[in-house]
Length: 267
Length: 161
Image (tube, rainbow over all chains, first blue to last red):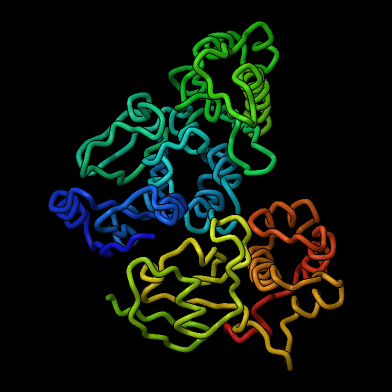
């Protein structure tokens, strides 16, 4: 690992100032992706700005209509939060299945969605629930936040402060992980929101995406059987030694059906 | 170089480190605690598992500077040859180790599982051990050792309290 300067920032203003002054500085949240990346010398930041002490990025607030999760909230804290388990149980379920316990004790929601790994879990919940991402500059709707492979709408110097999830009627999540690595080969988050059905697919493509055909079918009847006549196109899906695009397309449908069953079970 | 202070196994440790120094190297090279093992260095194997402010983490995937001002417990902090931790005794009784390389991480993760009340059944324990690899035992005896301590308080006999 190349060396770098380390700063534990005390405020969002300090983070913004440091990122402006040092174009090669990078924010550091839980480090569960960034540190392995640095070890492989795939990135060479001049400075890491640790976000762990910034008050605005901390804590979980469960309101009547929304759940607000600070960007520095660890996966284990979302998974084990009694208020989230009651308000949006599918979100707690998703967080409880990310990586392994040690990683869940360190990894954060802000870090996960900023990285936007196609095989990450959180992007599916953010898009599936239609969340809003609050940054140091603005509020970004989920549908506009994830823009492509490891890409987001975040601009240089802009960081995630909180994620606001609307409470929904019911929601479910299912992922089909690679048996060795545990990373998602195909996953699906379904939600019956107050504005209709949302279906988000992760793991299968280069970036999380909404499956509109599944949404239309589930709007008629929220039941796994409603997806029988639907199909996921393999065009544009990921293909690697673990799964071909055709196989992933098939897994998307399987994951979607199981996610609906999960939503009905959790409701 | 930043000078950092971490309380390790109850003793305050202040050392100068590079920003890139990993917590596991701080513990092994600066503090002399060789219990946390560097098995894979890629966050897979869990041999370097320690407790940071009471929660299990992989010390190969945490910068030492990130733990500045916090408390770390390694395997050296939970039991001794003269007075084994109850989970270490259970590992002994259930033959839950062969070569012993993964054992410090397994015990530290096992204590974390017991603290969180997650030693409820074998399937749950296996889910909770996803971040720890053992190439000898096939896991069965490790799972049984942790299960045998279910319902006990892992900190009651430890040096951590």
